Length: 106
Image (cartoon, rainbow, N blue to C red):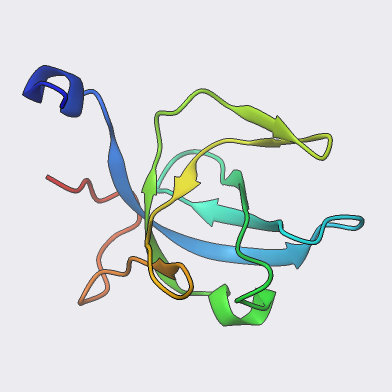
């Protein structure tokens, strides 16, 4: 269990995947370039390659955690995390309607 004070530290935002590609040498990771409504897009690495092709994610909006510490994987930096429901395969969370990039989840 965490307190509400811990929970509110997490920043969830809507972002649009503007570029998506496979990472050479990785069986699990896709590299996404995401517009989170900020000055510059962010690079996000996600371990969903076995379920999704890059074109499945391109130009779609998803929910991201935007204030995690950057993490290095396969020599690349991931600057956020895509949120997904856990099931037979991860299912990325999408807004029901298109909203501006950077919209906060509350």
